[in-house]
Structures are given as structure tokens and as C-alpha cells.
Image (cartoon, rainbow, N blue to C red; front, side, top):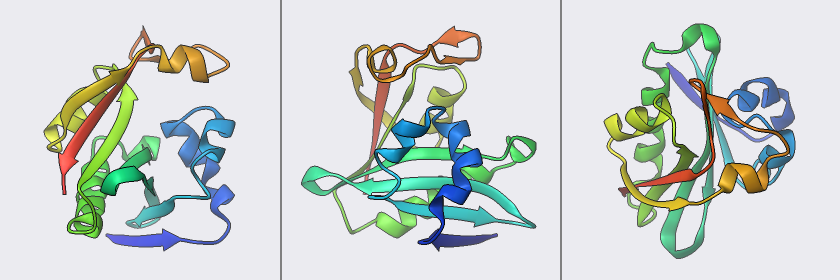
Length: 147
């Protein structure tokens, strides 16, 4: 596995980024101000965008694994890479996600703990309903991990 920081032509990664955040203008809010990581293992397998926020916090804004490579450890490998990169550089790592039976257990298994919710986030910020695992996403669940 090889992790690369992507500085140029970030929009080339939109097809994969749209799996993690399905509205392009939402991705535009953080793509240029964050660090874009790409995981390669016989081709592109996963991407992740991490931003620096206030008070020493870093935040995973987007984490996506190619559909044919899901459930093979690439998402966890990306999270572990991000933790290694930012440990000692900040106070904590945050991630906000939908209240979904697919993503919540994943982040908990990676060591994140729920620290809050943003009520109505998906209703207020997206121009169409977002569904995951047959459930409409309404609130954002915020998780944190000490760095």
C-alpha cells in the first residue's frame, strides 16, 4: 500500500469523492482547504480529505473506498494513516457522518467515540434526500479521537 498526498488536479478524484459525499458543491467547501490523501494498492483504492479546524482539531471531511474494494480493509488503513500523520500535531481528530448502520460501527471500530450531533444537517445542507442502507440521513453524528 502506498499513501500519496495529492496537490494537483484534485477534481480528478471527484468520482471517488462523490461516494463519500454525494453533492459536489459540498465537496467544494473543503477540498481546496484540506489535504487530499490517496491510497494506492494495484491502483487507486481510497481517498480521504482532512482539514485543520479551530482549537487544534483536524477533521476527516470525506473518506471513500472504491466500490470493488470495499470491506477489504482500505478504509481502516486510511484512517490509521491519517491518525499517524496528525498524531502530535493537534488535540483530536473529528469525523461527521450520517446516522447509518454502515458508517457508525465502522468509525467506532476505528476507535472514534460519539461526541455530538448536528440536528437536521443533511436536510439543511443537501439539495436532495440522502439515503444510506435504506435509511434517510437527517442528523450528522460527530465522532472524535484524541490525537
